[in-house]
Image 1 (cartoon, rainbow, N blue to C red):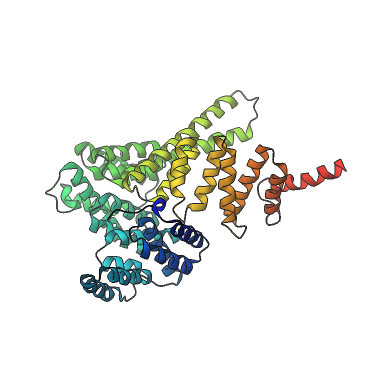
Image 2: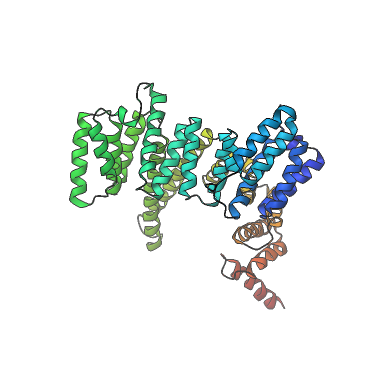
Length: 462
């Protein structure tokens, strides 16, 4: 049966949907789950509702401090539901929903639904992106699905958190090898090490990669690995090791060059290498940006290099924005249904001042309850930059209403709303926004001089 969209819901169902989205944002997860279950009873094909239900269930499950490694009754319940499906399919779905509510990850894997398991793991990582146990489980799910590029990315994340995680190092390299075999047609290799002619060299490189060298020992290691590379120019691991060593040496340009060679040799099949090149280019640009900003902060406009440094600063910022946009597009292309990635693309497009392109991405990102308010805030900023001030205020007013406490997110939304009111000539409304923030945080941005200045102006006029 065809998947139903939000637009195809009845008015009553749509009202329940909006209440459920608001309830998730306000962390009233039990209420949100009950609303979503009611919608799905009426419209089982409403995929977006089912995805939000999974998120709410996983988040609720997480908040109760349960571990997905505890003993589970999910497999038994799944078996009962499977038997019931032959007699009453609708009843079986309801039984499965109950199991998914209690143990979304275990139920999904027990039922043989790794895609839903991935969704559950991704939701857990939104709560704690550095949870190594969850990342390992996600890597195993991607392996089961045969999505080796995604598997590599996950293991790279683990290694960034814990460089000594031997299992992540091993599995990540196996995943990279499988990804390379898919793209390069290497069907005979049984594992990562079978792709390297000299297995002793492979072991040596693995051991060396765990040692952080400095000074002369670092230069000596670069010289030795470079000599090996000259003898085996097609050895990806030597290229990767040269990238690592030059990165340790803080020679980012050289590191980027070696990582790029490795990426080209694997035909972009190793997502970890692709991401490393992008990250180092960003790091290099940020270093240049910091240097330009430091120069401009200590030299006034009369200095002969001021104009040149300003131009170089703007160029570096523009290049950084474009790299971030390209990287976000590539990640979204691999996961087109991931609304968090869509939000990140919209955010980077806004940073690149490509406002019209950012609008549809941020509009879609609003459907993700975890990114909804941030997306609405940035969408309001886009509308403002495009001169659509009425749409901008409508978006920000709606976002502000959905947050009860004056937290960091609401402060930013209300502040942006105040600036737009000021631009529209609505000075009183602008001042009301600033006062709301002033009552909570005197030092927020330039709120204090705006509010206090208004009183001084009134006294002078009196």
